[in-house]
Amino acid sequence: MAGGYPYFTLGLDGAGPSSPAEAIGTIARAAGEDAAAYIPDPDLTHAVNVALVLGMPLLLTGPPGTGKTQLAYAMGHALDCDVLKFETKSTSQARDLFYNYDSLAAFKRPTEADPRLFVHYQALGAAILDAFAASAPRMEKLLPLGPSDYVHRGPRRTIVLIDEIDKAPRDFPNDVLNEIERLYFRVPELSNIGTPGAEPSEAGMEPRFRPIVVMTSNEERGLPDPFLRRCIFYNIPFPGPEQMRAIVTARLSLDPSSRMARDALDLFYSLRRDAGRVRLRKEPSTAELLNWLQILGHRDVDPASSLRQHGDIVRQTISTLLKNGEDRAQAVAYVNDWLAG
Image (tube, rainbow, N blue to C red; front, side):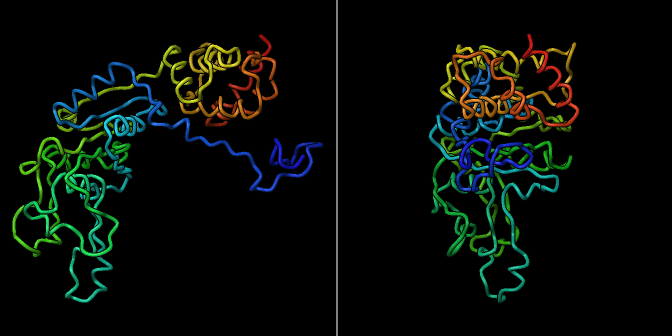
């Protein structure tokens, strides 16, 4: 019937016409990303506090999907401050953390145009500026004139998330060592405006407004030792079953002791751990488990029932946990054996 599952019906015998796009019952996945529902392990909480007290960047590693990025938003929620995110790319340069200068627009404008019109502050630059009052020395040469994508809201404290820093070129971490440690940067394009001298640094910053820097790495490449020495490091381990049950409860309001949830977690951890029978190149993550549980609920799987009673639904949705063809071939065979067990 149009409007119900399955929504896209090509290739399914007797399924009827596909649904109009607007009628598809897409799951609102925001609940699975709710910062208020983040559950860190106690050691991670202590690492956050160490970084806060010392005023040092917190560097997080760990398998994909373990909540490295979400921790910054959980901190923002708990500490009542905004999060400014910088998404690292393979082309990122140190300056990109602080600002971009639109040289082409500046070239096209009249010579008398104020250069502040062409500066676009990025996450760490905006956070440093926000740590000062607008009346602080030398701020007049940095704050934009007229409409801008940056609005100064200082003095206030913010969290800066530098996501996947290991994607950047090898020199990137070393190039930002002093700037991150001293919260200092220059904008040479504005050197002729106002009072000459250095731009803002921690020397004139109240400690209570010092930006909180959180960095994540998937360890795709190593980070330089001098950079690591200036960070508080924590590797987030993959959650064990007990912690995972707490995560499921907090994020999905699903009783982890229900028969369906127990079976789903059993199959999930079996796919991750049964190296004797299945070796996945990409083991399913917490985020993928939450997605799978949501689609099982959407398919009206009764939480009180055994997942083995819903073999067809399990086979139709198991792709939520798998990320390449080789893994799928192994996992489907494993799931079929598990369903028959």
